Every structure is written in C-alpha cells, then in structure tokens.
Length: 581
Ligand code: B12
Ligand code: SF4
Image 1 (tube, rainbow, N blue to C red):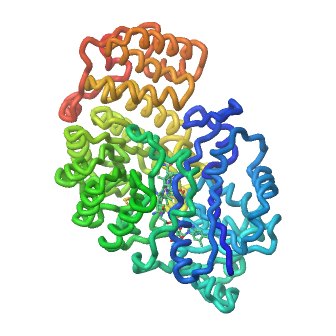
Image 2 (cartoon, rainbow, N blue to C red; image 1 turned 135 degrees about the vertical axis):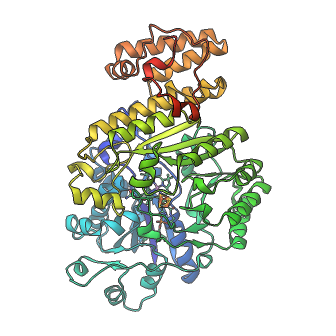
Image 3 (tube, rainbow, N blue to C red; image 1 turned 180 degrees about the horizontal axis):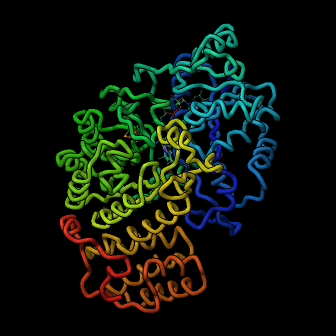
C-alpha cells in the first residue's frame, strides 16, 4: 500500500515571515512579536489529486501537511531559518516517516525558497522516500530548481497532476514511465536537447470525485484570506470550491494558463450541484469560496449555480474576482437575492490605456463605473483589486489611474504591485528588457522588483502605498458618502490589523465625531497624534498626504466627486481636497 503526504510549504520567504515590512499585514503571536501573514486557504490541488488517486487506487493512504497552518498555530517562533524549523518539526513528528512519497505543492513565487529548504530537509531526513514537486512554481521554475537543488527533488510534475501522478503510481516500472512521459521533468531530462515538458490535462473534470476535504482539519479556519475582505469575519464552515478550470484571456501579469491552460473546462452543472449538496450535508458548509479563474465563462451556468447556492441558504464569495464585463444587472441582482453581499472586482487599473494596451485585459472603465454603481445600489460591498508597476505603464498612467479611482465609489481597494510571476508574459518582457531586480525571486505583491526606463521599484512601492492610504482611508468612499458606520468598521479593522496606524486613527476619529461619538473620537485623535509625533514613518506619510492630526476641522460638507465631474475638472492634490483642513 502506497502512502503519500501532500505538503504545502510556507507562502512567504523566511525574512518576510520573521521580519515583515511596515507596509504589509502582520500577525502578532503570543511571544509579542509581529510575523508576516501566512494565509491558510484550502489547497485545492492536493485535495483534487488525493480524491482522484483514491478513486483508482482505493488502498492509497494520503495526508496533508500545510506549513502555513502549522506556523499559524504556533504561539511563538524561535528558529533562525525555515530549515531549522523543518528539521525540528520532523524530529518531533516521527509519524511522517511512514510516507513513500512527499508531494510538495507550490503555487506562489514567495514559496519558492521555502520549497527548496523543505525538500532538502525531507531528503536529508527521509532519504528512501521520493520527493515530487508540483504546482505553478515547479511547473515554471523547474530549471532554477534543478540548478540550485540537484538531489533533493526527485521529480517535477508539469501542469495538472491528476493523470501524470496516477500513471506514475500505476506504472509497472515507474522510472521507465517517467523517462517516457513529457509531463515529468527530471534533472537528467533537462540535459536532453529535444526535451520540452508537456501538459497532460484531465479533459473530463467530472472524473475527479468531490475533492478530499477530509484532509483539511479544523486548523484551516485560522487565517483564511477571505476574512480580509471587509464584511466576512466568521472563520468556520468556509469551503474553497472550483466549478471549472482554464481561462481564455491573455492578461500579461497572469501565469494560470501555464498550469491549467487557456481552454475552458467545466464540471457539469449536475455534478457541481451534487458536490455543493454534499458539502452542505456532510460538512455543514456556510460559505463557499469560488476559486475559478473564469467563473463567468458561461454566464447562464454561472447564474444557475448562484441561484442554486442561494436557495440552499449558503453564502458565497468569488475570491479571485469575476470578469466585470459579464456582470450585468440581472446577474448581480441574482447574486444579491442569493445572499451575496460582497464582490471582489479585478479592476486592475484606473487607466483605459493601461488596461487595453499594457495589461491586455478585456475591460474598460465604463464597465467599471457601471458595475460599481450597480453594486452600491444593490448593497453589495465591493473590493477592487488594483495592480501597478507593469512594464509599459508610465508615471502619467499611474497618475491618471489614481485620479479615476478617487472617483470610483468602491468600498475598499486592494492596491498591489505588479509582480513578474514566472510563467507570465510580464515576466518574459521584464527578463528580456533587463527590468528585473536581483531580488525578484520570492517577491510578492507588496514588493516592487521591476524598474523600467520610466520609474524604479522604489517609486512604485511608494505610489502603491500612497494610493492605498488615499483610496481606503483619506478618500474612503463610505466616509465621503456619509456611510459612517461602514467607514468606521473599516478604519477599526485597519487599526486592529496594523498597530499604531496613524492615518486610520485619524480617519476613525473624524468619523466618530461625525457620528456624535465624542469620547471615542477624542481617544482616536489622541492615538493619531501620538503616532504622528513618535513614528517617523507615519509623520512622513501624513505630511505627504497633507494631513496634520493637530490641525484639523471637520468638513461641513464632504466633497463627492463623480466620474462625469472628473472628466471636466482635474481633481486637486490630496491635501487640497478636504476644503476645511
Ligand atoms: C485559489 C488561488 C488563490 C487562493 C489560495 C490558494 C491556496 N489554497 O493556497 C488565494 C486567493 C488565497 C490566493 C492568493 C494568492 N495568489 Co493565487 N491563485 C489561486 C488560483 C486562482 C487557483 C489555485 C487553485 O486552487 N487551483 C485549482 C487546483 C486544482 O489546481 P492547482 O492548485 O494548480 O493544482 C494542480 C496542479 O498545479 C498540480 N499540482 C499542484 N500541487 C501538486 C503537487 C504534486 C505533488 C503534483 C504532482 C502536482 C501538483 O496538480 C493539481 C491538480 O491538477 C491560481 C490560479 C490557477 N488557476 O491555478 C492563483 C495563483 C496560484 N495565485 C497566484 C498569486 C500570485 C497569488 C498571490 C501572490 C496574489 C496576491 N494578491 O498576493 C496570493 C498569494 C498568497 C500568499 N503568498 O500568501 C498566481 C501564482 C503565480 C506565481 N508565480 O506566484 C496564480 C497562478 C494566479 C496568477 N495570477 O497567475 N490564490
Ligand atoms: S488574470 Fe484572470 S482573466 Fe486574466 S488571464 Fe488570468 S485568470 Fe484570466
């Protein structure tokens, strides 16, 4: 009987975990120290593989070990590297010795270095077991991995793993099978001139049984990403869920197609419904987190799924956003009726030129305007993702984007720095033009590692952070529209997430005064002043924004800009916008 342990390495570089920058979300442990935020979302890859393999090999034993979950559950962390931590972990947990195969699943660039450290530890401690790596990073960085790490990783799977892994496990001579299959990459094959890895997609998704959710224990509720999206804070009974694979678009910053391809494949509607019912009956699911790349690929089907889920009384969110062009009023109304109260919108930029010519994204700003307005009218909380710092984007584009977004009344904005994801067209452009900084490996969306002729990485980091402070705090749309309760909730979330956030304290104070909560307002303004005075970081940012917590008056009338106005007048600098400052 074969035994496979699926392992997910930490989603952050060690340095970003133990020494997070001022600009990122952090977690405080009981040891009083701040750590980088490791998400604990359910890893659907291993869950799909486990379900599929067990269907054909019934006596197969599988388990899941997710180091993001393990690290989140620690009260303190005293190791000086992830290697030291892994060594200690496996020494204390000898039960893992029984596994024949370690299947490491690595999806994100920041996990690249921890994947290397993990595989070294595994090989050192369990030399007889086989270590296989799969997922987006091994599929795209196999050359780098084998160059750096010649012996720790035995096999790399290219793209989707269901068919290759099953064929490998069922092969009479696995080594011979690997030699003959282009879905498997080995160090030896890299030296062969004519070797090109090839996908082995699973055509009929219905052939995969319901994902093996049993592998995820209760600890998965520790820190799921979706709790950062405003209105959802309950952590239990959330299940990640997939109804399709693939996406036909060509956004230059995206690497999804390198694993799942550009052709849409869907689970049948009947099958999708059956799985949802099972999740409800067996696990008591309360919220479904759809993870499809292009859920709106078939809008009719999408509408039917939404209605079905709504009728069952299950909440849902689309964590990876939905194609905005397909979000017509009928669909949004159906979502609302079905209980959806928030939507992630992949707006990406407030510049039409950037959307069309730089990102190659199927979207224009008129659509953004319509969807955000519809959502406001329907009471759907909107979280807009924005990325900046792409090759080809100019300083003027960034300014145009900033001006437009200030007139967009989304509830919240996620401002990210475009990251040269291996496997994306953006990566190829940056590599070819010499735009990549040395530290690009392991970087994430908070860290700029690209410098072009127009700007450098530092400029992009500053602009992104400034835009974040402006759009979410200073120009917070709920505040400007007088939705003070909602605005205050958001400001207080920021205060909770980041100690001493002077701008959030400042805006929370103003909101409290508007709400007549004088004592709380006094307390918050005192905090804003204290942090402004004692912390150079906040003084610098508040000065840049033209905000001084010692000199402020409440606006009598809050300036609300509309898209139409912005076309007529150029909005003033942030500091001039609130007229009574
Ligand atoms: C869901 C998702 C998330 C979820 C969480 C996923 C999780 N549970 O860990 C959330 C929303 C939290 C998330 C966050 C981010 N994501 Co994301 N995400 C996805 C998404 C859309 C789907 C992943 C998924 O579940 N796929 C479905 C399963 C079935 O497929 P799979 O995991 O790829 O597994 C298959 C194969 O890879 C392979 N395989 C996987 N593991 C193994 C192991 C072995 C042994 C074998 C043989 C095979 C194998 O077989 C599996 C079955 O076919 C992908 C895009 C995509 N379509 O892949 C992006 C993607 C993985 N994300 C991406 C990125 C960049 C991010 C963020 C960095 C973005 C950000 N805003 O910061 C963050 C990173 C979080 C962090 N560092 O902490 C990039 C990663 C590319 C890269 N080079 O880094 C992707 C590819 C999207 C893109 N734009 O290109 N993400
Ligand atoms: S970013 Fe989204 S829409 Fe664009 S290609 Fe990738 S999955 Fe498709």
